[in-house]
Image 1 (cartoon, chains in turn purple, orange):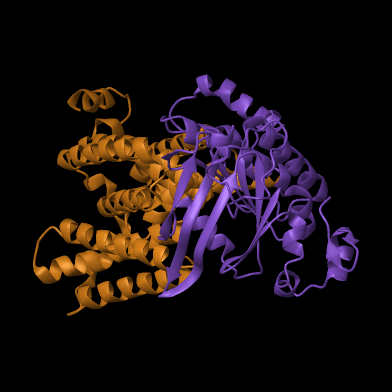
Image 2 (spheres, helix red, strand yellow):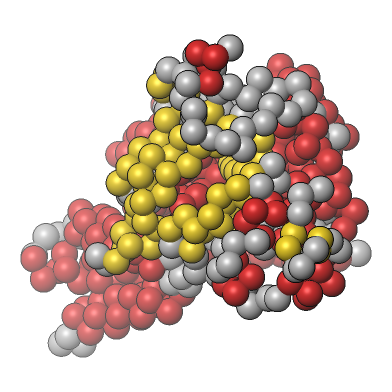
Amino acid sequence: MLQAFEHHPKDQNYIVRGSSCGLCCTTVDDLSVFRGGKPIVEKVSLHIHCGEITALVGPNGAGKTTLLKAILGELPHSGSLNYLDAAGERSRKPRIGYVPQRLDFDLNSPVSVMDLFQAIKGWRPTWLFPSRRLRGPARDILARVQADHLLDRRLGALSGGELQRVLLALALEPIPDLLLLDEPISGVDYKGMQLFYAIVGELKKEYDLSIILVSHDLPVLVNMADRVVFLNRTVQSIGSPAEVLNHPGFLQAFGLDARSLELLGGIKIVKGGRFEDV
Amino acid sequence: MSELHSLVGLLPFEWAQLEFMQYALLAIILVAPLFTMLGTLVVNNRMAFFSDTLGHSALTGIALGVLIGISDPLWAMLAFAIIVALSVNYIKNRTGASTDTVIGVLSATAVALGIAILSQGGGFARYSRYLIGDLLSITPRDIIGLALVLVVVFLIMLGTSNQLLLASINSSLARSRGVHVGLVELLFTLSLAVVVTISIQWIGILIINSLLILPAAAARNWCRDMKSYHLITFIIILLCGVAGLIISFYWNMATGATIVLLIAVIYIISLILHRA
């Protein structure tokens, strides 16, 4: 057991939650992204533990999306990304599942949920022959996010919440080492949002997922996240939600004071204007 | 091919006995799957404006061919269409924002330049056949060429259409699934450039884009998944193609335009039924 802890010995906040092993993790090591010679994201180093939701917060222009794109390999960057298994060995590049922000696609597209599955899983073009072999597995994967009844629906006919659940199901096939949720519920109604996060919480435990969640919704972050990373070009603060909320620069960066945040999201302030973990 | 050819001759109609009609029919049978594969993607990936520009740029291609002094301008047209395809691709990836204006400027410039060069000395009328196209002028050699293009495009689409579908939904999502978005889009735009350019001599610059867009646009009003979308698009092109060929023969009209008119009628019907 002790051996397994060795790759993050200094981490004081380390907690094993639920049934997850909490021993494997994905590390971002000294990652920087430059655009036109200027750093957009600078020297970011993170340990993203499995079985945990790591929330990435920061004001607009803080470089959250840039960091995600760099992790996805879409933007050139310095530094590296490594997946460490439970023995703490640098095994390989992490397998990444990605749930994008609200999709900007043509709502009239004749693309069904099944088509999307076939496009991802099968070699055979969606237009060639019906691929019945894939229907069973596709339904099973959708069932993970309570969306198996949506298999034959058109993408454009899904509600915002349903669409994001389908995208979540796709990101879980195959089960990734690191799941990136990029403002996954922007524009989704309250009920859809609740269901989405309930499912994410379940999946986190069941599949021992490392999850990075980017969201503007501070109350949601406080309630969902096991760990919060406050990013403003570089990492300003890492810790439990309360620790980050109490960081002197945090509320200022969002143009908020403690009272307005309390009103905004029912986040309780405990003693002398300081936040405390639930 | 000669077997197919003689099969058509067995049909008990006056038009089916004529050699140029037999070739034209074969051409439609080859064009239908080709335009189905490309048209459905053009509509889904919102690239109608782009394919329109490709068609218009053919005028400049012809003009360049004339300037260089080659008798068959097809190669000059192909070369120029590929340059246009590459530059539009580049602009699209570079800015990321709406590229309508840039593509519009490119299109207008290509048309103006083509007309300016071709009309020099008052001889534009010679080239008007490219505006309208003549399906009945198709030769056996053309048909073999068309069949080869069909095979190549089919193979490209076999390998890339799923990836193009993902890219059309969300390019970051596609990249996270290991899709080389730039590469598959490039292969697609090049296929499109080649097919549009070689078809112009038979269909005509003015309506080539309609033949590409309208069938898929009509099919979209009926379909809920990719399979039916492609099947219905294919059936529309094939039926309207054959019907248009026969009607244009008896009424002595341009074949390409007749076909497009029929497809436009189908589109309007699909629109009315869809709204109803």
